[in-house]
Image (cartoon, rainbow, N blue to C red; front, side, top):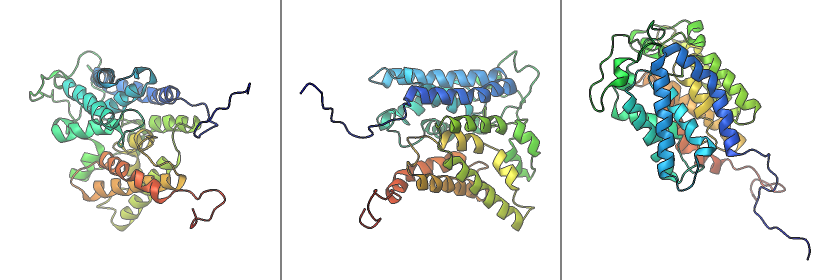
Length: 332
């Protein structure tokens, strides 16, 4: 009886990954995107990212029963929320979105590991429903004074109508949706357009995604399935009517598709666990995104597509459970 017999539930062998290590990898992958956003939009982007992140951290600290700030999860939520917001958004709205992301999207479901939806997208969806005008007004990039001063809209008082400096611009998706004007593919790839704080430079987002895949933090099946579905559907619609539907390159590189596919759809808690489920989940998001963009009233559909797929993810796992080793599928 000198040896101690330990009885525990599976898994008995782990890969050594921890929550804080995974979340730090996400922050590292986001660092180039954040740096480009600040360079592209100046102090407006820096202030939006800072306020959204601080609001998430403070809400996590107030509502969490345990000390969870050290796991970096709230910081990741704040960064993703800030990157998904317009850079000229009033800062008090960014803070309110951070509170909603943690309080509603995370704490209400039981905290880390229990959230049914991506918390950052919950915060963004709340802001889009509450302040639609502010959430669809975009700051023109590359302003000469972007490092010298904040735009007037960022400093608007709570519940006051934001005053914009006249330095606003349409996003590529808005230009196509309402004016049938497409944007050059190179401008989309290198981020030389208006848009949300972190959605413009597709190449940096892809580089961050490759880092997460190499580190085995993100399930590569989800973004691959999502992007392939969007490419195939977009190419098909474009072939049917090139004057009405944009080509696949525009659909892939514009809007928040890359940011959503790489960093939000791959949320390990809100996405399916099975390999086949991951393929189906990514394809579902791709189909919904294309349908909303092409036939819906809004120019962008990535946020709603991911949230709807999050709701279906538990059912996908239930339907596509792998066969138990040593049994047939019928007996399993």
